[in-house]
Length: 172
Image 1 (cartoon, rainbow, N blue to C red):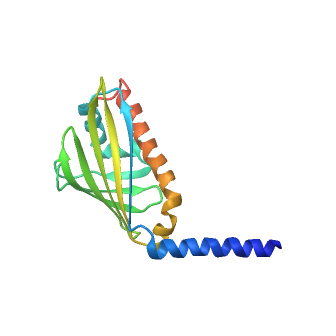
Image 2 (image 1 turned 90 degrees about the horizontal axis):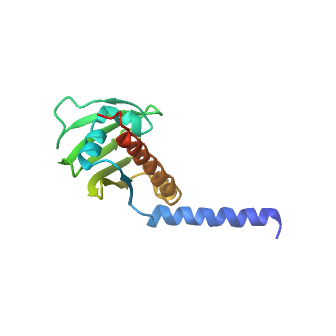
Image 3 (image 1 turned 30 degrees about the vertical axis):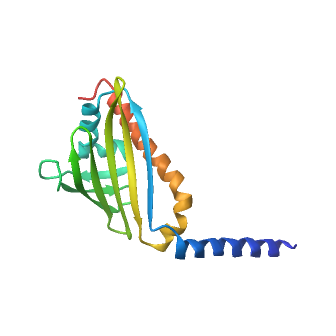
C-alpha cells in the first residue's frame, strides 16, 4: 500500500476514534494519587490549607488569599502560569482529616473538584488527592485518554512538593 494510503488509513482511524469519543466519550474524569509523608496529618493539613503557599506546590503564578477564616464557603482565586484565572470554593472542611474544593476555570468550559485526605499511617500520614472533573468542551473528551496520565503525574508532583515541605525541619 502506498504511503498516502497508510496516511489516509491512519487519519481515518484517528478521525473515527475522535468522533467516537465526541459522541460517546466520558462526561467526567476521575483519578486519585497519594503519597506517604513522614509528618503528621495536622502538619500536612495545615501546610496544604495555607492557600497563599499554593505557589510552592502547584505551578501557579499567584494566589489571592481568602478574606474570611478558612472553612466551608471560603472563596478565593489563583492565577495559573498561563495567566488564566481560577476560582476556588471550599465545599467541605474537616481539619485535619481533609477538605474538598470546586475549581472554576473561567476561560474554559471545564469544572473540577478535588478533595484531599490526610490519614495517619505509621509515624506519618498518607495524603491522597482525588480529582473529579467535568469535561465540558469536546476537546477535553477527545484528549482525556491522553491527558489523564500527565494529569496524574502533575498531581503526583504537587504531592511530592508537599512531602518535601512537610518533611523539612524549617516548616512551621
